[in-house]
Image (cartoon, rainbow, N blue to C red):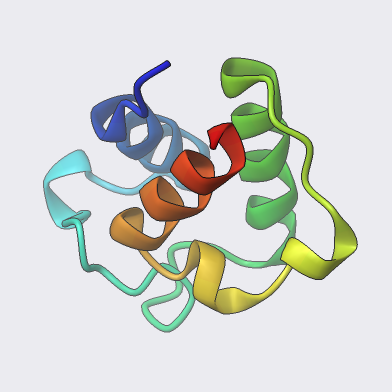
Length: 80
């Protein structure tokens, strides 16, 4: 299964009410206020449902979800 960054980006934009064009691959989602802890929980549910992965407590570090590049890397590793 291939990680579709555009799908993840669309989900982030829709769930955070952010213009799609404002979110780049390296946009810092938390630092720029696009996502908070609730947004992260929604994102994790989205990723688990769409990619069939399981997220462990040890995965819940900002480095895994700080931007689209990090999210893509995280999901790709989980699909392993």
